[in-house]
Length: 141
Image 1: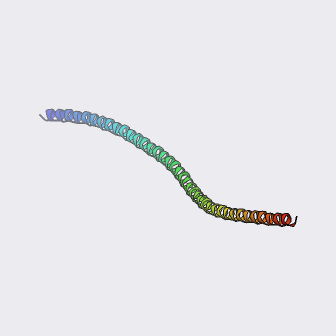
Image 2 (image 1 turned 135 degrees about the vertical axis):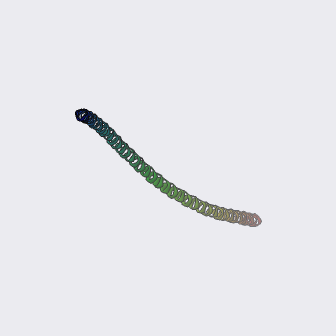
Image 3 (image 1 turned 180 degrees about the vertical axis):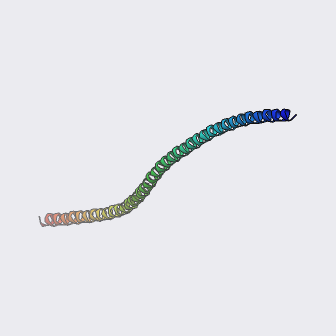
């Protein structure tokens, strides 16, 4: 019986050692799988970080382009406002010049009418003076 117990114990020890080796291999396989999964996760994380950087760079480029377009729009808007101001000044200046032109025209017209009236009076007085002189000369003969 003691021999059977020793034999059973040896057999149990052998089975335990076999099971231990099997479990060690299983643990090694699990660790290798875990390491492989960790490598995959690290690669995924690195790829995600690279994508984040690429997206951030792309967004920064768009932001720079947007800023440049905004600056151009602001400059164009400023230029438009300046041109509108210049156009308004020219319109005001033209209106003032038209008023002056009309005043000068009316002044010249009034002056010309007075000149014509004076010329007509002078002609009438010359004609009547001539007729008087002719009458006087006729009266002498």
